[in-house]
Image: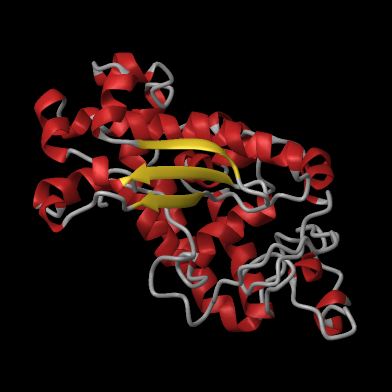
Length: 310
């Protein structure tokens, strides 16, 4: 929906570029580190990274290929304008961005999982790698709210930085400017939800008990799949959109999904990592139970209510 800032690589007509591969196989863990950028690149059949890139002694922050000079200049110009308009003190940056280099390096050099899908760490080409680096550098210059959104699960220690950056970039075909456009659309509602601690006391925020709300909108996270990802269920046949609107307003529905995403799903991801330490997919599996669903339920009101879930 227009008020949702959550998205992943399944959106934005990107399937031809980044086709999903579904497999229950758990591959071995390579070292994925943004301090060693070549480790994010694809390997050849013998498992060797691109040697030209690997042999360049450069850091995450300084590597900029010539073909991206124009994009870099555009980003820096935009960043300067934003910084001049911002009244926030540099010392108030999101604490993830304030950590010292040693702490970040220690975190980033932890082994990740090599997923056999394009767009994930370990499967990037040189241009994609460059855009990850450019995106990360730009995040450190802009309003701290962008960093908060992108690093939301890194801060909760259920996602690694490299995977978080790639997750957002996959959603916009590795075009950083388009990612920032989407973040611009959602940053205001993020700030509002953050001030309310993402509605940890969700019943108070909604003004209705969860058991009652669940009878009208039967959507809930419950358990984890074999790969560790949280599983969310929606019993579409029991969704009663008209009843929802009779009890609460649409604005009072939003706190439920903020709570589910920021508190419940984050906790389920942490549980998933206990059963599968190699879990790096910060995403959920959604199951739609269509039993009892009829065409009569497909109304504008129902569509409005369902869109709120993001």
